Each structure stands twice: as C-alpha cells, then as structure tokens.
Length: 232
Ligand code: DC
Image (tube, rainbow, N blue to C red):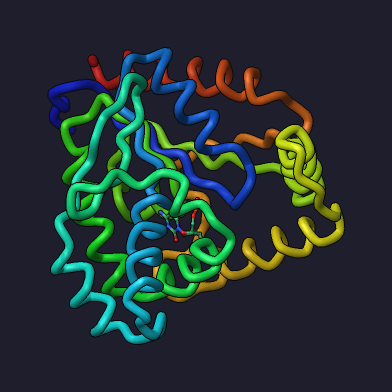
C-alpha cells in the first residue's frame, strides 16, 4: 500500500458506551493526529430530520435532506473535527436522548450509510487520523493501517455510564441503563447494512478490567508498531 501524506489511519470500532470517543481522542492527541467521532455525523442528520418532521424510515426524504445540507468540519483547539451543517457547529444539541434514538433508526439505511462513508473517507484519506464508529475498519477504511475493536461487557459499560451521570449530578437506574445498552448492541450488530463487527484483521481489545488510560497506552503501542510497519 502506498504511504499516506499525513500518517496512518487508526480505525476504532466497538459498541455503545465503551469509551471509543474518549480513548480515540486521547490517542489522537498523543500522536498529534486528527480525530473524528463518526456517530456525530449520523446524529447531525437525525437532528435536522427531526426539525424538519421527516419520517425516519423515509430513505428518499432523508437523502434529499442530506444532499441539500452544507456539511463541514471545524477544528477547535484539540484534535477533534466537529461536524457543522449550514455553518452551524453542532455540539450539545446532537447528544440528546431523542436525537440518539432517531439516529439509530436512520443509521440502518443503506443510502444514508453510503453518503456518510463517502464524507468520512474524504476527511481521513490522507492519514494522520483516528476515526471511531461502528464500521470504520470494516467498511469506511478496510485498508486502515490499524484496526481496533474496543469492547467491554455490557455490565461494565452500564456501570461506567452510571458513574458518569452521577458525576454530572444526574440520577439514573443501573438496570435501565443496562437494558438500553443491550438493546443498542443488538440494533447495531444485527442490522443488514454494515453491522457492528470486528474486522477480520482487527485487534480485539477488551477493556472490561482496564482503565481508559491503560486502553490508550495499549492502543498507542499498537500504533507505534503500525506506524513503523507502514514506514510513516
Ligand atoms: O457513537 P454514537 O452513540 O454517537 O452513535 C450514534 C448512533 O449512530 C448509534 O446508533 C450507532 C450509529 N453509528 C453507526 O451506525 N455507524 C457509525 N460509524 C457511527 C455511529
């Protein structure tokens, strides 16, 4: 494979709530690479579709909307590319519960996925990039120099989420969070189009019993090997 201009591509896939974003951002920071959390793009379209009152199963209407929007990425002080549409950078408005639910409905649709994949390839193709999602190593960049499947048991993910919420002063039920996580896992891994799964040549990293900082170190070790192998 020919060398990329800015370094290797690190693809991180895995289920909801495993910490792909936090870990990916930290890895990107340490490597001085860019970072994209691809779920934000699906969330952005869902947010806009809800505003427009669209049926989330109406593939034509959603594609029509997606094609009309002016998509962009803005880079802040850190490594992360934030998604913008029509000049508005989207942050808190796309992380709500209702947007999350709508996102998972439209992320099933083949033409929506193809549209997002094209934009994700455009953002990362020159390398020097960490990208996280559900299908980065299997579909967006099957030729990524390093593919990680970051996993943790549903119970560990639910426990972490509960701690996160209580740190923010929010109350939640462990059982309810666990149920939500198990449901999201099933939705993401059983869909027809680009389901969540480990790439055949990907590295499986179970973070059930390690901290996020340890996961970062583990991935950085693998990155160094991949960078050397690629001659980057
Ligand atoms: O990672 P997240 O919670 O922001 O993802 C939101 C939804 O988008 C989730 O239901 C999975 C879906 N998604 C996807 O199907 N493919 C991706 N590459 C990223 C996210």
